[in-house]
Image 1 (cartoon, rainbow, N blue to C red):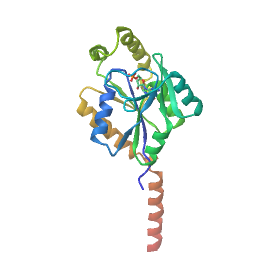
Image 2: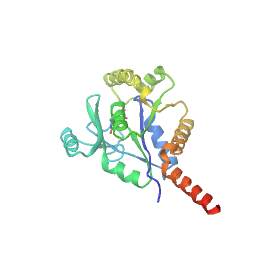
Image 3: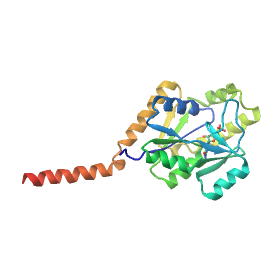
Image 4: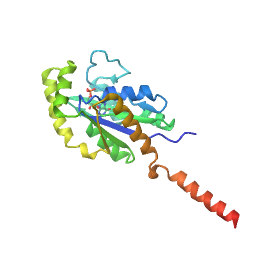
Length: 212
Ligand code: 5GP
């Protein structure tokens, strides 16, 4: 049986390119990772599909999910609710997949508190100027929204040091491989391999005794 997967939270400024990064990581390693699909009350952007990028729900539906305890965490971000449905995450971790939650910082900290062995990664563009030009260049948001996302980025920058690793997204290809290798290393942490270490110790003792 495969070991249980690791829960990974990826946050980053809006415009850090983390969405593209996650898509590429999953395309390269489809058997290793599963991406959790969040529920949100914001409207779909052009090209987004219900059940693919998000489950797009009404405020009432979202509040019902909160009341039923269906969400691992949720947060309000620029006037909309975003939350992580519990069932899918639990099922994929059981299957041995590393499950990635692409969520903002309030949610990340809630997940870390509830599940302390969560790996927290923060994605950032190389500079603040680059961040702004990516947001403007995306052309999907109004100037008001861009301004509120830049304000939000200032707040989120304060929380960067709560994360385990910082990933600078300059070159997509290099960044995907770097992220994959950070996660591979995380699997090898001694704290995640207690059962293996115990059985190694027991076997060594057995072998030693059989020689005596
Ligand atoms: P966007 O509207 O650009 O798709 O997402 C806005 C922010 O909400 C991003 O920082 C994204 O990572 C975050 N987000 C998406 N899903 C969730 C979720 O389930 N929970 C939380 N806390 N944040 C989320």
